Image 1 (cartoon, rainbow, N blue to C red):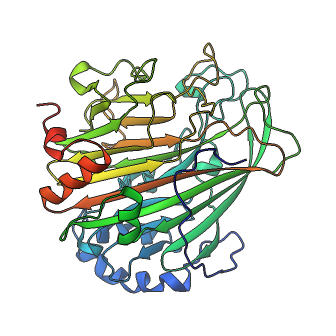
Image 2: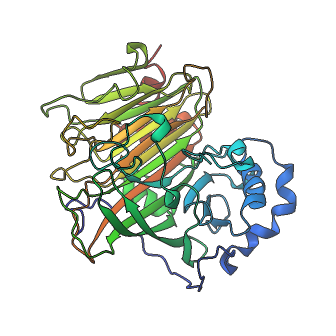
Length: 420
């Protein structure tokens, strides 16, 4: 089964097969990244080079995808659940766009979730609700009982193929949902670097001269590898892409939505109601403050969702665009930690701003832009695919402004002033 409304063509990329029996040996195509290891310590925290060096100490099979000129680079780790850890638009010295949680690598493993960070990770949902994958059948939906499945939390994925610009990974899973259904799943994930011409084609605007960019596509799929169909009685999983980025005082998330549709614009009370001074929406644009100082999450329902969202950091001068598949006719899973709401009444995309908990502790700071697939009602042997693209731009404000206006429908100055 495929989404009815696929929004991205699969990027053509030559693939050099390399047989790997579950290991994460660095492929020959990425061997040049290993040669730079000794120089990475010369880079300051916050730079891409610093993160390459740090992550190579944790994962000997780390893969660095690179453009021909070396400016656009993306770190991928089969060892760490097929994550895209981070990216750069300006080589090793450039800003590292993804959030990496350095402390999480020190161990010991957390009983609930090992938050290593990552600019794009693939989780499976729903998190809560009648078909939750994070609570055992009958368990009360509270933090003590919440556990991220090991296959998307701590276990390595299989490296299937890799070349200089693309990597493919997979994972066999056997998960029990809250309804007591055993789900046999084969998950697969391809990460591909997107070149400058493809960026212009995807977004409908060519970045101006001097604008630096990096972009990648993830093509994610799950296959029902068992003998039982997934339906509204057994429950069905969904795919869930989560992008963790570094916040700032001048960072704002922008989510265009369908203004003429009926129903609520957004769910704004996942973790308690988001304060009014941190969110506002009208005329088809939602703004959400992404400073990493107040914990809050929102979701856009299928009737309101569009296939694009983004953020602008006015201090770091970074424009980020995220595009993803949507299915207006699909049934999206409710992921709230409760069982008293219809299970297929969920949101089609989410955004999160990290902040301190009641006891003052904080995982981040970071912020997230997320997309989810509809519920995967699959017969044995069939698959669902979900595509999720990330684009970063930095450079002169005039150049960033033309991209923001074309793709998000708002200027970067308007975004920067959203909460002033």
